[in-house]
Amino acid sequence: MGARLRYGPKTHWNTRFMKLLDQLILGLVTRWTWRRYPELVADLIKRNGHAPCTAFPRTANEKFLWRKIFDHDPRFTILSDKLASKAWVAERVQSLAIPEVLWRGTRPPTIPKSVLQQNVIFKANYGLGTNHFIRNGHFNREQLNKLGQDWFAKTHGLAALQ
Image (cartoon, rainbow, N blue to C red; front, side):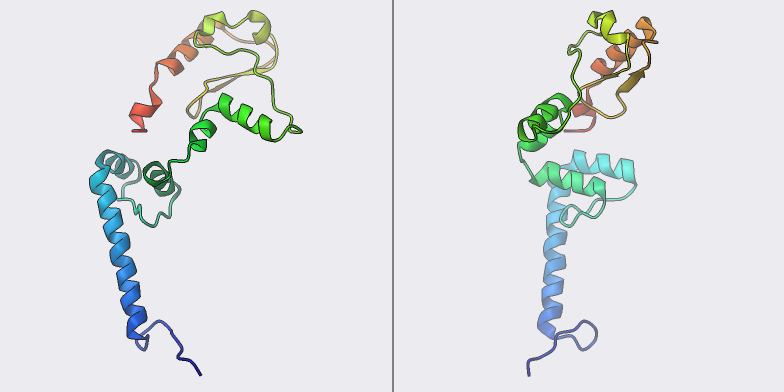
């Protein structure tokens, strides 16, 4: 009959040693990321109020940080871009109904009035909270232009240290 390994006071010394070794390695990796990427870590501490555990991330923000530091899969760049991700999905799932893009550009005043006279969503290609719903063609061109200019003026990557 083999030896039983269990946690607690009667745990085999090798198991306790390995658990301590795991904690040491995870702690060292976490400290290394704090020293190597202090701006990213400081930003997360500022937003969450606690230091992140990058070696064994638990929260969504820690997982995003881990991905920024360790996972350099080029698909994440594509999937972070709304227009590029639509094309990427359409290429792979032809049977999926994907809404048509009616206008693409960087100057909201150039949006044709005919596009805005229907139920549409005016959105930036990046960032969160950049959606403006236009229902039944009811919109204020001046407000729409200002909203778009504000979105385009904001630099998401530098503020989020991406």
